[in-house]
Length: 357
Length: 278
Image (cartoon, rainbow over the protein chains, first blue to last red):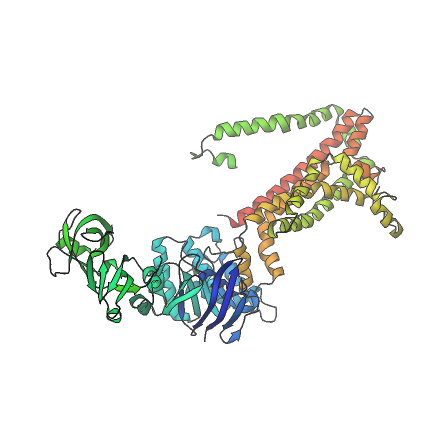
């Protein structure tokens, strides 16, 4: 196992940040800790790094119990949200720092340090900036230097705390892909914390969804996205329409409208339910194709790159429905504000019981 | 040099006005009054000037003033850094009180401080009593002067380092720890270089203040000729003897040395800053 966490607990005053959390991560995996802000994901990362002490629990990194080791003996690479580069040192010296502070006996020779730093900076495509100072670099470049610095000490595991959230959208996406590529090359067990579900879905081998200090679900991006374990996960992993209603004899009511309940809930007699539908799973047409279609009027049209977002007011349903259609379909159907459409709800996820978002 | 660079169109308006004001202010408050020292010395003529500023007693006083101010500032560097560290990094009851205490040397009439020290360290004073059997004499020695100057210069160092330390993100230190640095390595390799400009400023201020300090020193120094006479005291005693020209001559030399030292320290600072800023 790369990382084993056993029954970690952490409270700040009355606030329970981590609630009896256990997690196993195989060696060489890239894991996303995904959750809303304040869910405890950063605290968990800091506990693994030893920057925060858990109240109880065990932390085992690459088969070595590191629970009570101080950060400098854990041999963990940590990448901070705001880079935390050493301002007074050049890029070269920043990356070399971890090697230069080694005890004399373990410290590599000067030439070796130089070679290693240059190799790492080539790996992060920053070899041209050896003698620059951090203030002379852009945010994305700084974060790459910070990553090289963390990798310089051959860490047991690499921890990244919202590494891209301080960067602009374009750079963020670029760095994401680049990090994935880098990880495929170096294979160090890595955890990155994010609140951005897109980032987690795109980058991670496995996603661990955390809420209120507890794991809600873990699995591959596909598993988590397609089979969310509960309403929280479903809701957190993307835009969603929520219909509050009842499930009754195999039918789920969405306001005045009803749809068939999913198989596993067919036998539920009577229960309050919540029905979730992703905007891109809603079908839009100009002619009624099915008796079950809803009739509605487009209230708002939003351009979202390749997709068009529609806000549709439907008869018999209280809240307007958010739908997404490809641009081509939008043009073909000659959709516009005020146009009458038929709405087909194709795929629903129903969760019974009360759940507050 | 900076002056000429500003000739390009500047986005910040009001350069002419604010620069004019600065020059006027510095002239009225600093340059014109201090130039009196220079003009008062001129009628004296070269030979008497050299004679008066190279008198052994005067030379000894320069040496004493600069060396005591230097050692006091050096001590303040350590003590001030430590105090600023404690005030910024830790939470403890009475912190506000301690923080306010730092400024007290600013507010106190320096003569009061001098009298306090003299009483405390006199052979029958609280601390003097303890030191007397050890044959350690504080009063009437350069050590006494240094103690008084440490007191006077202390707030300068604390107050210049404090804001820089407050601004410094904790993450920088955490990053160093994660990379395997010990606390000492983190301090010497990361923190100290970061604090160095502020530290240098604080020490410079404490040093400059120490050279000019009069009130607190004369009570504890004993003012023994050739031994514990500071330069400002030389000026005062010449004035007492109505030797105005001689007093301004000594003052002029003091002024020139102080100014060139401050200039040098500023240059060091500028060079330090330039190194890592684009």
